[in-house]
Each structure stands twice: as C-alpha cells, then as structure tokens.
Image 1 (cartoon, helix red, strand yellow):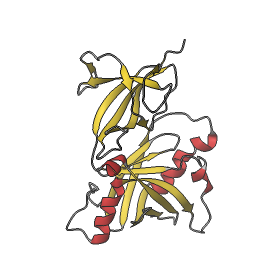
Image 2: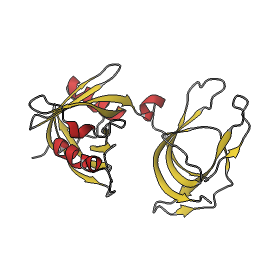
Image 3: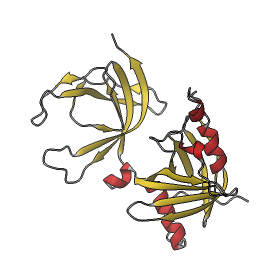
Image 4: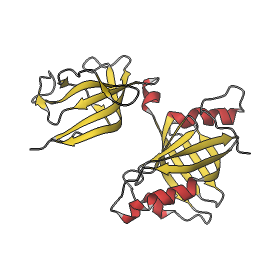
Length: 250
C-alpha cells in the first residue's frame, strides 16, 4: 500500500523532522549541487547543463523537474524520512544536444521510485535524496517568489508587444520601455473582453528576457512589495511561463 500523498504543508501533529521537511520543500527551488553513485563517484550525466542545474519544485503532492531537456512532473508521496516519486510525465520537445536530450532519462531513473529524504535548514537549505541503488543527490534551496514576498502572488496574463518604445525615467536616460497590456482568459482558456491599449511598462519581469521583434503573452505572478525603496515600484512580477509567442520581425 502506497503512503498517502502529502500536500506539502506542515502538519502540527507530525514529528518535528517531517513537519520541517514538509514546510521546507515547497518554499524553495531545489537546485542540484552534488550527485554521487553508490561507489562515491560523481554522476557526470546529471551535470551536462552546468549553467542551469537540474531543479526540483514541490507543490500539492507533486514534484516538477526543470532545466532538463523537457519539463517533467510526477507524484511525490512522503511518509517519515522516505518518499515515492514518479512516474514522470514530460513535454515532448526535441533537444539537438545528445547529452541534454539524455538528461531526462538520467534524472528519471534516479528519482523514480523509493527515496530516502533528508533536509537541513539554514542560510542555504539542503535536500538530500538517496535512491535504492545508492545514488545520492544533494540539492541547495533558493527561496521561491512566494517565500521572498511573503505569500502567493496574483496570477495575471500580460501581452508584451514586439518592440519597446522610448519612455521617460528620472534616473535612467534614454530608457526603452516594454509595451504591455493585461489580457483575460475564461476557464476554458479562451481570451475574453477587449484588451486595452499597450502602455509603458516601467517594472521588470523576473525570468523574462525580451527579444526585439517577438510578441509574447506571459503568465506571471504579481506581488505587492512591502516597504519598497523610495525610487522603486511596490509591485514585483515573476514569470511563470510563456503562453504564446509570435515573430513580428520585419
């Protein structure tokens, strides 16, 4: 019988170690720092994307894997210091680099199945997952946006025009602003209403890099920033995903 799925929220009745793990896992992005096999040898195939280490994110009884060839997601059920992960489903994007293309399978075979789980809090939290074969994967935690801004953001959709336009800023001469408007979708994913005019967007969108000539629709989380600096916005935007993209280069 498989253990019941945890919703990753701390249970006040749980033992302290389990409660701490349940609270830590969804509060951080977990990036692979070390990986060794049962003989203590580095698992090189897991580090083919050195600038973007394999990342785990936990929410509502599931684990998502990114910085692989395809985004992967699977169940994650925890009981005490053990857990069961997977099976994993993934997107179907082809990667021309053979080593990167093989990364999905390399990650999957080391994470799917029974795992021993250990976490350590601190300035840089640590998550250690050990599988039945003795592979030991060490992840370092970086706080999620919800953790950094003190709660969940508001999910909004922003359409970013293909080209920027000059805009005035008291501290930045010759500033170019993104042209942005908010759009709405119904529960079937269809656009509703008439979007307004594009407006100068003076903020930044964390995780988004604009390419001139490319129009994008972004799904972002919008946060209220408590006590921002005098010359800064009281809003922060974090990219969740690019929903739509169109090349409008002339």
